[in-house]
Length: 265
Image 1 (tube, rainbow, N blue to C red):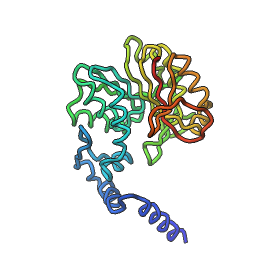
Image 2 (image 1 turned 90 degrees about the vertical axis):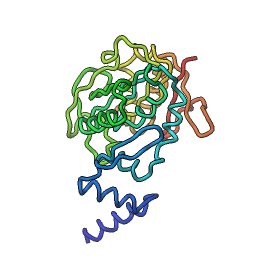
Image 3 (image 1 turned 180 degrees about the horizontal axis):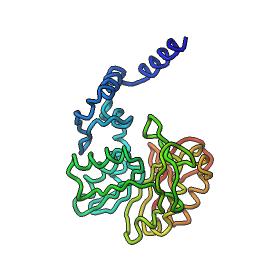
Image 4 (image 1 turned 90 degrees about the horizontal axis):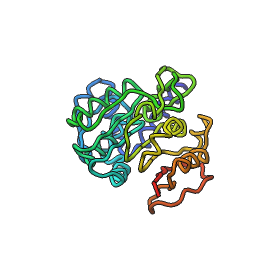
C-alpha cells in the first residue's frame, strides 16, 4: 500500500504541473547529473540548469517569474546601487544588472553555500563580475550563528534556531557600513523584519525597499506584518502593497502573501 500511495502522490504532483512532460524530463536530467550541461536564456540573461528546484522551475517554463523581474527593473535606473538579500541562483540580480549597467553596482546576498556556488557561476556565465558582487552570508538583527533549513525546494529555505546547516549571521549595517543604496530587495522567507532591524542606518540611506510579506512566516520568527510595516515607516518609508492594479496603501490584517514596497516621500 505504501508503494501505491507513493505512486499516486507522485502522479498527482506530475499532473498538477503546467508542463508535466517537461517536469518529468527535468527530474531525469537532474537524476542523471547532466542538467548542468544545459544553458538556457531568460529575458536579458542566461542561466545554467543547476540541480536546484528554482533552476528546474525556470527551465521547465522560461517565462516563470518574469513578471516580477520586469516590475523590479521598473523600480531601478542606470547607475543605481542595489542590495539583493536572498538572491538564490541570481535571477533578480541578473535581471537588474541589465538596467544598472556598468556604472551601477549590485550586491547579491545568499547564505546557502551550494546555492551561492550556483549564483556565482551564473554571474560568471553572463560576464557580470564587475557589476554583481556576491556574498555568502545571512543577514539578521544580531551578529550570531543560526541554522539554515535544507528543504528540497531551495526557494523555501529559511533561518531558524535549529536545522541542518549552521551559518554566520551579520547585521546589514555592519556588512555595508559606508555605502548609500538606491534599492533594497529582501526575500528571506519570514526573516524580513530581522534583516531590517539589523539595517537601520543603511535603510535610512536607502531610497526604496521591496520585500516579501507572508504573515504566517513572520510569526515563525516572532514578528508580524504590523511590526514590519511600522518599522519601515519608522525608517521614513511610505508603505504600499504591490497589486496587479498598481500600488495601494498597505492595509494590515490580510493573512495572504503580498509584496510590499517602501518609498521615500
